[in-house]
Image (cartoon, rainbow, N blue to C red; front, side, top):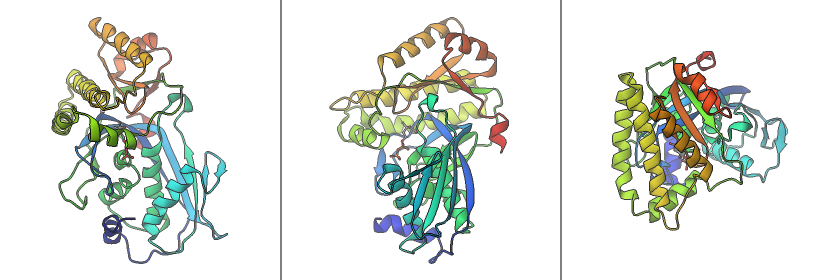
Length: 336
Ligand code: DP6
C-alpha cells in the first residue's frame, strides 16, 4: 500500500483491529447514468469527474467475512473454494490487507454473486461494496456510511456507489488525499423506473475498465473535453431526477454514455467495447423512439446495452427485445 493510501485507512480505522467475528453484508450492483471514466490519482483511485448511478436491487453480492481458525486466508466464490493464486483471491486479500495493515488476522471470505450470468455484468462494484461492509462489520467498526463508501473506492471506483439502493451520486471531491471523494444516496424514489439488460457480449472478456480508462486518458485527443462535460452531465441528470423529467434524464444518460465511448474510440490505438450487435440494438432503439417509445440506452466497458424506461413501456420493450432481462430498481428487493 502506498503511504498516502495507508494514511487514509489509518485516519479512519483504529490503530489495532479486534479479532474478527462472522459478519454478512449485501450490496447491489449499479449502472452509471453519468459515467466515471478517468482518474486524477490512480493510487488513491480518485476520479476526474463525479458520476451518478442507479442500483440493481436484488442483483448484487452477498459476502460473509469471519475468522479463519486454521490460520490461513481463504476465499470462496459461488460455492467453490478458490486457490490462493487466483485473481479474485488476490484482490480480496489485498483489500482485506488495507484494513489489517500488518496485523495477523486471518479471514475466511465467502462471496455469492446474485447477478444472473446471462446478464453478462461485472460484479466488482457490488463485490467490493459488500466486502467493505462485511470487513467493517467483522472487525466491529462503527464507520459512517460516507467513510465506508470512501474505503470501497480503493477496491473499485464504481464500488463507491454500490453501498446503497436507488440513485447514488459519487462526488469527485477536491482534496488531494481523496477524503472528500465518496458517494451519497439521492433521496428520490421513482417506483416506475425500469432497466433492461440486453446481453450481446458472449465473447472473451474485454479489456478491464481500469486499463481502458488509463489508455483513454493517456492517448485520446478527445479526452480533454470529457471531465467538464461529464461533470455537467452529472449535475443535469441529478436535476432531471429531482424534476421527474424522464425524457430529459434519458437523453442526457444516452448522450453521456456515447460521449464516453467516443473518447475511447479516439484513443490510439482505438478502444472499442461496443460490437456490431450493440450498434444494432441502438439502431432498433432509435427507430422505436421515432415511433414514440420513451427508452434510452447506456453502455459501460463492454458490449452489452442497458435500456432505461418507465413501467408503462415494459410491454413494448419486452416485445422489441425479448432477450432483455428487466430489473425494478425500486422494487421490493431494494428495500431490504
Ligand atoms: C464504464 O469502477 O470498474 O463502468 O475504479 O479502475 O476499478 P476502477 O474502475 P471501475 O470503472 C467503471 C467504469 C464504467 C463507468 C461507471 O461505472 O461509472
